[in-house]
Length: 109
Image (cartoon, rainbow, N blue to C red):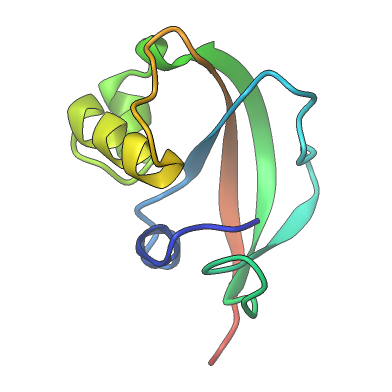
């Protein structure tokens, strides 16, 4: 699973335990499976996460508790990061797939 370097740091520090990906396509990642954490496409894995659960929701439905699980202090900070990661202003009525995960292991560099 590819993450920005900032998000990788949050995962390894235990601050990020959820991620949301735009779109209503069938989920790309499956509950119970373990995936490499990559700090950018094609980069070497720095750890592995296990997907615990997934859900779909509209961006406007993200709560402060969920924003904290994303590694941010507020929904406002989360929305700002979502816009940055996606390179555009994300609409409140867009759907996301929310993945809850746990860090399985950190790969030593």
